[in-house]
Image 1: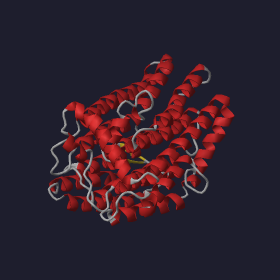
Image 2 (image 1 turned 45 degrees about the vertical axis):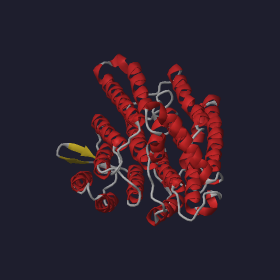
Image 3 (image 1 turned 90 degrees about the vertical axis):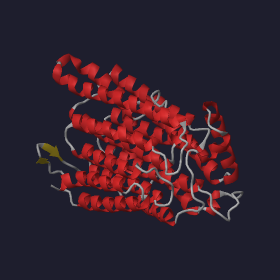
Length: 458
């Protein structure tokens, strides 16, 4: 019964938030209370004890519990930020429905059901992207186009995953076709190269929190579901199939950090994509231990990075913006650095042990896998350093001038007045919310203290 309550509560509260959509702050407060109750349910769930309720098999293990905890922290980051920042009228209710769908996808033991729920979550994630804040009449046309393109791609990806999953049971000679369909569907869902056509636009046309909820969270959940499928259905055959998968994954691992240039938002998106590529590489190499733990640490690091970048972008009265941001906003600076270190898997943070397992698997696999991981990590470190330099050592006034110039180049061709460009993609209040700074400190403490790397393999 606890499983069902955990899934149904966000949906029930979403109805209340929708009724309170004219009072966004009250609705967000109700959403935060819902998250607190869901966390209580999560802590009390029986581990490794499958149950059947209403004909549905539900189960959770310890790594899955930690992943759901990381997802709740990420969603909580968005809700806490929206207590002070502008938010779309339907966003709190939509995000609660997405949360319920994501929880169901992770708890349901049927892969087809989980993938169907993920597609529904992606459709509502599109609403998060296009939902404008109260009082805003201008929405970037590129944001709408990117959201629609992403939804179509995810629909195709879901169909490929479902077809690939069901083909082996239909015909014994369909395994190779099943492998192609499954990995292609995963690549689409994970926005791996070359299916990253909307990634940069979504990062630049939305707020960091919408990007976190609409892109990062679905990515993480589909990786966890795919890892569950790999436990019972091997999809990596030795020989040419293994080699092709290594090369395909290596394109993202090496190519994504090379694309992490230009605006800060674009760099953030491709830095996170690089880590997604490394997680997929672990699946190709057959890393069963620590795979879900890597996904959990990825979500936590993404929450830290998005929260810190949003804090660094907020204009604060009394600060000229001519100084170095790391001096003026040390909490946001620390959050960005620790989030990137967590992404890299440095010792002392939760992702170290799973990353070490990944390196060992790459070493055992051969020179190609190890070389891809090594080169990708070096390029990721370089991209992370560039991101830190742009956010922490570039004066805010110069960065803001570059952002507005970039928006004029992007929006002017589609007819938006230049005077309105400053309102896109988000209008922020002239202060740094204390609640968001406090939440960032909490994320930093969790990133340092949580022993995600000690999780037992399922």
